[in-house]
Image (cartoon, rainbow, N blue to C red; front, top):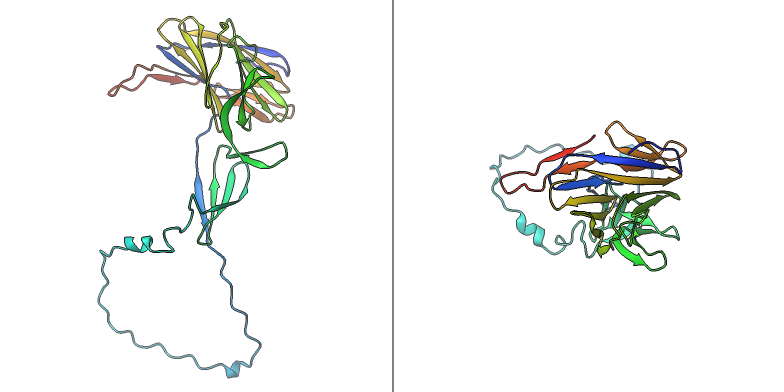
Length: 287
């Protein structure tokens, strides 16, 4: 996409050779990495002894001569120990562990055995509601009759999709009051079909479908070609309070007035969906 000034519209022409399928990651998409850290329960320390005369301490016994012992077994099976009462619910238990604190990327759980488990992720786990309370991310798209758009229930990007494919903001996101939206030029007046976290527009152009998928930390756009032919599409990017800039990877960074990246559009990825069990799909990416 072409760099633009804040609040200006920037045109972006995507040109890629492909066979059947084109996938464009619109917002930011990062891999999931979950780390579990177990914190042992605190152990009460014994009360210190009152001050006493060192001469009153008993003499330390000498070390006894060790007796020879036979080597232990190396094929012992300790599996049954983990099934004893008190072990089965040890550490994190999805039913009995209790959530004690949460933030956007971290959750802390209290386990039945007194340990604590920290769950850390590189994509948002929680998002703040209007009252400032952390709530689990919910990517489900639900229609709003007042705005005629479908919004994700709880998401850091506050994504929404339009009811028709030819809407000037067919997909939109908002971060800290700053907005960005995309529209496919010359799109047909096709209605949206919602399915959980997915939105689909069929036949937006000849032999072309347009779909969106909301994940925990991204919105993905996919253009599906039903047969070979067209190889370019024009999208219109509209921003409010954000400036688009091309980065070194061929992606687009949307920055605020302070130069902080608020939304990122990774490079376009293109692949041939005709791969089979013995043939991987052909794929390209980047500029």
